[in-house]
Length: 207
Image (cartoon, rainbow, N blue to C red; front, side, top):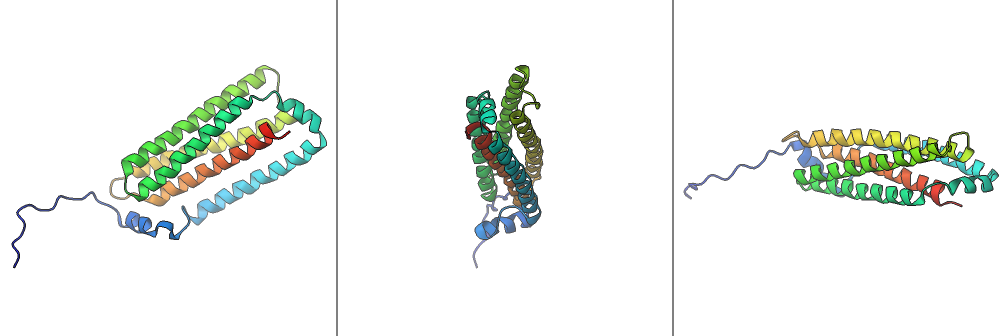
């Protein structure tokens, strides 16, 4: 008979059965759940209809739209695009960190994601203020689309920041973290990033 060890094993941090099961699921499922995917696909369809309407009206007034586009700050648009792409990188790495059990690292990455989102909002407010101060309002057809697209996107981004806050709160629940909550928040954030890339291409780049 083997004598018991005089030093008992050190206690391990509690890990919920749900978290363990979800982590083991790994690559065998889509991230998030069906409800979030329905919401994301519905939003993409909604924006897609708006994009089609914009393309139709732009085709009817190409010169007017192109002249108005020249008043946009392409540099600010590029910086905002880089900021959101960087935020999506942080968000994706947060999901990986959660699956590996590195919860402190995941929290830091989600904070960085949110920080990029706040920076995007500040840059967009600056751009709006500059445009409105120079008389570029919704009475101009191009800028009416500009304010609608970027305004709806900002609403979604604000909601995305709220969802990230929910994910951060989830990660503070010691012993019962649910990786799917983080995955769902990151999935929604990626949708926000994708929408901005399309908006940036339509409003800033297309001539």
